[in-house]
Length: 368
Image (cartoon, rainbow, N blue to C red; front, side, top):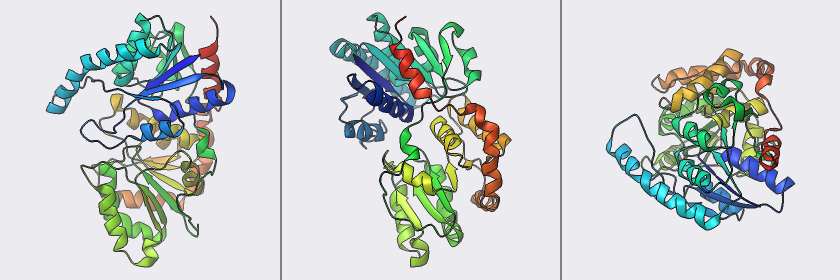
């Protein structure tokens, strides 16, 4: 059996790949995704690095997307839409998978569409509370739609929608590889902007990093977008710090799958975006967070995730238009009361589903 996996959310895709390797070792997996992190740059994408490390065939695809903002970039993206469908036809025709498993995004739309035309069953997973346009289109052509939240069912056909939770990669629980050795003699803050990093988050950290290092150890994942040079700028700051502070500041463009477990094992507090992957991973790990929602995320999904954490008392919300000093005050407050935040995770137990990957794989192989 051959499964084509595609879509914009890598972490749950990796969780499913782990489950397939564990329970269905004879299944052939191919992956269709973005070779480059941004269309405007030639930086190799994180998904390309992770998938090829596993010796899984990686097929690059560029596809257009519809946005509500009219700009030169959005028009250029729109013109790629027919090219994405053209390329998608040849990918499906050449590889003829038995099943297509999509994790949303505009990238998956042409593949699921052609799968429907070729009568190849497709399954899709929606991570967020409110799906974007791409997954609404994809679900129309899918055999089944898996959702992480009960509230998301109303956006899809109830007859073919199943609440599974979000697949969690096992790597977050296991210390496999240490990108650096940290002696934990004070609280550890892990700052992350997601796979691509976040320039806005990095800018705030530049302003308060010295004050943070006075009290804490800081692990900072910056991303590697060439446009902003955030990693290089922060490295200069680190190199100009007194050795006592510099030795507490650990910088990386991104952490690979076999490194993230070590990072999470050390972190007392996570500061960063409120994407679905981070949201569910922190629930599973019971790690409090300062969430900085991406203002233009589809359907304000990151704002919704951040509000769930804030209401449960396991996190706080910081908006990137606010002052860096306010972010610093929030971090101080949370570290001082970190045990209280941790203890409140019991109120989110209803979102904890440890068997999502197993359930999804079983559904894919169910003969009906």
